[in-house]
Image (cartoon, rainbow, N blue to C red; front, side, top):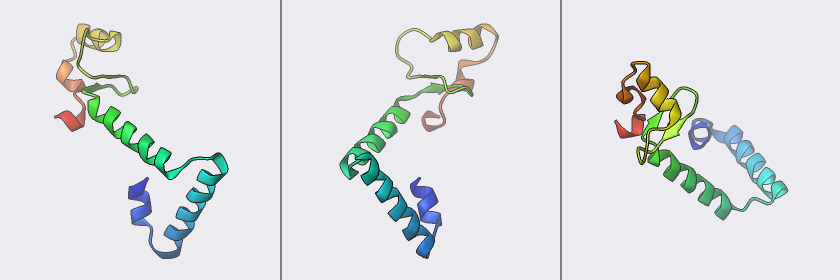
Length: 87
């Protein structure tokens, strides 16, 4: 979302920020909770080593998950599913 906000300029950016802050107040979301949620999402995203087009993920620990076993059994290289941030 920050990328979208950064692309906006002037009054449009300020209106969007005010709208987001009002929604946060409306739903009782604190800035600290939002920051923690974003940090958690980033850590979870960084932990993903393999991902398919349907959103299945695997961090590379333990046995291959079923979705990746099926793909490898069908002849697909496991490296095809390596997440971009780990390439």
